[in-house]
Length: 158
Image (cartoon, rainbow, N blue to C red; front, side, top):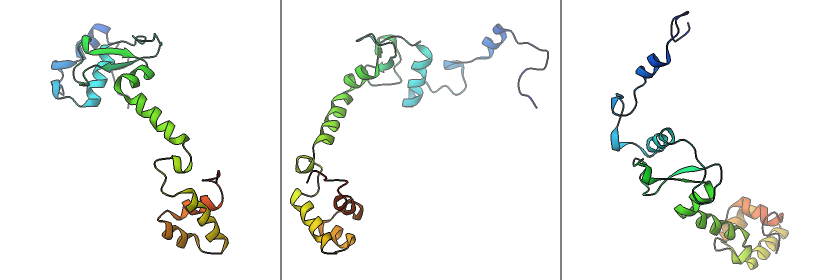
């Protein structure tokens, strides 16, 4: 069974516009106690897409200057491309720092749990026939990590 107007009955644009209720007239309107997602969707509906205000990129997001997504006044909304938006929020610097950490190999990586000497020792122990599980327990790392070290998938520069 089809949902919508009766067959042969065409609703006028004026009639449809009367039925649409947004804002305080809508029975589910929450006012300023809107969720973060709800605030963002309100901004999407309220402001048509524009180019980035900083670099001119065609594709731009709506940035809430004060960080409050419920505040959708025009002076709080800034149109920024993804790169400028991440830079404004401080996420770009964090992303770059993360990518720099990825380029650091071996002992230079601050997240490394073992040293290059440990890697050499792991490979020697495996050559003697010691199981992956026992080696992993000895160095406090996962069995898959030992497997990757032995196969030179990780720590291949050592």
